[in-house]
Image (cartoon, rainbow, N blue to C red):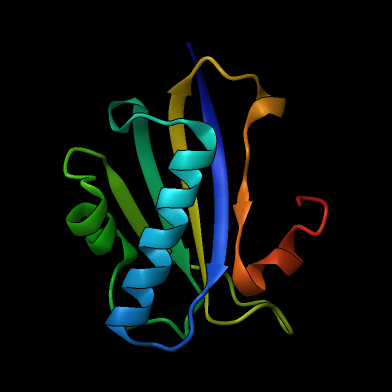
Length: 120
């Protein structure tokens, strides 16, 4: 089994716990579903948000809504870059998998699709 990273990003409608929760859960579920990941195969999860999303930690919603109870998680702010995407949530799931690097399906939803136009 190999260790692989799965990237995902989305945008959040507003800086509220409800909107951040919905965006976090939707993105995690899509990443897991598209890559057939079992919860026990997740080594750790890294969350980052743009500084305009300061209502809650995304890891809170992963733990409460996606059962990431035993998954080590960290949250941080994204580096501020002039004219970059705002209201953005990014996730890196590091997983144990038999998939090859080119078989991983990274997920970019909503406004974050502009970050990776090469991924359909």
